[in-house]
Image (tube, each protein chain N blue to C red):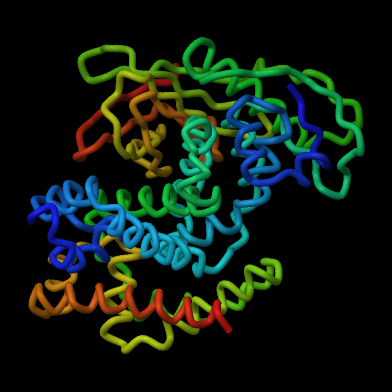
Length: 190
Length: 229
C-alpha cells in the first residue's frame, strides 16, 4: 500500500493513523510531520530536558504506529490520544528518574506565554479560551491543576508538594476542574 | 460508596477524569460509574476539559533529523525534503505488522542506510545503498540469554540502532556506550513494551572508539550488554 506524500498531507488525522497502522507508505511520515512539533513540545514542557523529550516523542510515535488500530474515535481525537500517550510516557520517565516535578509556576509560565503561531485559527481560539479559563483560576487552584493534569500527581502527592492537607488538595483540584469547565461552557455559548 | 450515591461520586469525579484517582476510591468510583449514566456523562465532560488542557503546551520544533529517525524506526524509506517533494511518488515497498521480530535489525539497518544515503546523496534517482560498513553485535543478558541486537550503520552518517526482543521486562531502558578508553557514555533512554522495543539515535562518539553497549533496565538493573569485536 502506498499513500503519496502530497495526498497524505490532505488526509484527516484518523485516516493517516489508520493508514500508518496498516503500513501505508507516506502515511507514517505525514503523521509524524503533522504532529511532531506538538508532541515534542508537550514532552519538552513536561520534562524540561530536550534529550529525554526527544526519546519520549520518539516512543510516542512508535506506540501510535504499533497500536493505531486500538484508537477509538468515540473516546476523543487523535491529537488527544497522542497527547495522552506522550503525557503517560513523560510521567513514567519522571518517576523512573525520581526527578522532582517541574515547578508548577514554571509550567504555568510556559503555557501562558505561548501564542501558538503554528496552529490554525480555530485551534488558536480554542487554546486562547482555555488559557483565559486557566488564568482566571486562583493561583493555588492553578498550581494544583497543573500538578494533576500535566504531571499526573495524585491529590496525596499534591498535598505533600504544596504542604497542604489532603482534603484541601482534593478541593482545589475539583474546584479548578469544575470552574474550568464552567468557564469554557460560558465562552462557547457567547 | 453506595451505587446510588452520586453525591459521594461527585467528590471524586475530577480526580477520576484526570486519571489520578487510585486505590479503593478508584475502585468504588468505577463501580458506581458502571451503573450511573449521569455520572458517566459528568466524567466524560471533565475528561474532555483535561484533554484540552494538554493542548496548551507550546509547540516546539523537534530536533534536526527527528522525522528521518522516526522513518528509520518505522522501517520506511526516508522522507523527501518538503522543497523537493515530487507530485507523484512511486511505491517502493509495503510493510505490514511489527518488523522487529523477523529480520528486525536488517530492516532497521536498511532503513538507516537509506536515510544516510538520502542525507548525503546528491543524485535524484535513489539506488539501493550498500551496508557493508554496518557493525552488528548481539545483546545478551548477564546470564547469556539473547536479548536483541545493536548496530551502528556505516559511514559517513553513523546511526545507533537498538532492537530489544519482546521477552524483555517492559519499562524504560537507559543505553550506555562503552569506549576504548573505559568510559561509559549515557546515550539516551527508550521504552520497551510487551512487544519489545526499537530505538534509533545518532552515534555520539567516533565509531572507532566504540567497544560495546550496555542497557540498564527498569529498577536500575543491568539488563543486557553487547560487545563489538
